[in-house]
Length: 387
Image: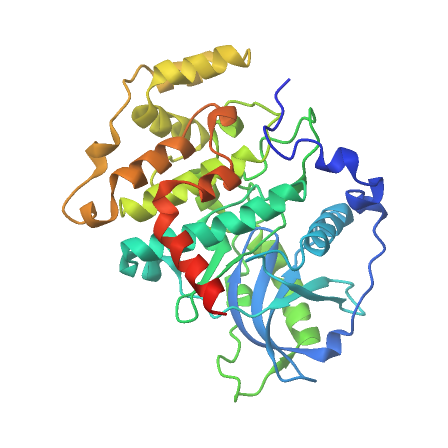
């Protein structure tokens, strides 16, 4: 049995109510307190809008959930409540639901983020160190609270570069860690289409993009949202597909008793993409090909050692696809465009993240003490002294 190296017994030692999300009684706010301004995105389980609190006139983010099991909704809310106030974790402000459809929505703090595809190519060496350090704060905190995020990727890391503010969002796939428990390895898999593409026009309904423009009530947004659901679940958007690129080897080889270290692999994939300016770093076309892409970089000797250690076997078809590969040195990925971002300490840090064996990966707390972040730690200490 595989167990987490850190924060192993957090949920064992706490009262059962801490992680018993199925018994959570939801306290609903008033949906009429919020109005939709514009659509800002969608994911597998939700549609996301910029909104406004009509009482305070403050911006917010409204996440309207698609029909899923009630216990999944409760799990996300319970986790958000448990980690509320943690460093760089998005704040849940309210939960509301439509009186007629009963569609639930989560209300979050507003973050004026820039799309990572636009932002990342502009980041300096220090910027990357700073934002990865800020993300590690969020990960160490949620891990210390007995929670795995399980969906760390650029889409779920909101950065307001002007304010140098980072928030880790989308806790819909997060789960409480219990030592020895076997978890679903399909946690970040793409759904099969459920209907035809007949409703394209419905899902493309636009919302006013300016706060000065007429706004829509949440009831009207909910009604359009429900009309569009059957089409939306069939769409294979990049937001869904991209999850594969950040999947840890444990998910790809069906090791079910994984732990917080899954998040550290995903962080490593993000970090590699940032410093090598290669997004995504491991670009697999399906789950099998994803393992192939990893093996072509990390080699198959260590993959086989990992499989043997945990008494796992690849099915013959996958084993044949993976083939045999030697380990590639990280220096192979350095070029004229990225060499200013790839220092020896960056390579050392990356090497401690991208390891097949989840028990060999650096923890979030250990990562924060790595020499790669010495400048960031020094700047933070200086700021704290002057406050």
